[in-house]
Image (cartoon, rainbow, N blue to C red; front, top):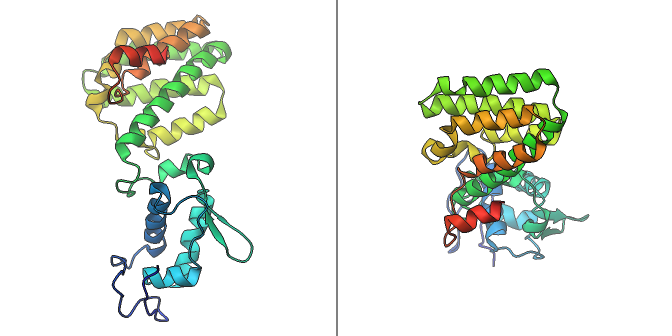
Length: 262
């Protein structure tokens, strides 16, 4: 049942009822309403197939005007969390079937609905998949000048250590050569999202990536496999290298995790 509120013309509320919402900060109102509704949809508090209250009722519930609600619903619709039919009927969707990566981008501030730790691990798995296939494609497609640059950057990589932050920057520059050399635009855009912090990878602790970042020999071997056009070998080694930063799932042994990645 919706809590009853009296909404003023300025979009505020006079006196909340017993089940009033927590106070809404006066800045970025539509962002706040979007986040609260998103969290309810992701947690199952609003189940897939359920009809959301009308705009007027949501405005009363949150103590804001209908324009704020309309903007929040528009974002939920763009994220494919809800469906808005003609006439204003709004239905919750099964986000596991409809949502895209833009949902992960919106997760900061999502509280405990989908924890950033979980999203971070999943993003690292995606990174390993993209990186390993990019190494394969780069071995098949890259121009000789690009292959030479990849080998030279790998051989120069050690000079940036042992500082992990400096190595991380060099790592990004090296992988950009590989991603651009693979010729896959979707991989390049995903890479930009990963390093730009739009996805959860950007907050991965450096300490978690120590084994990967300090493996100078492995990187040089990978560069030489790519330059030698050994697509299968490059793919396997890239997956092994990138998978070192992925924390194991609870209850999964290191041996089982390694076997699953083969």
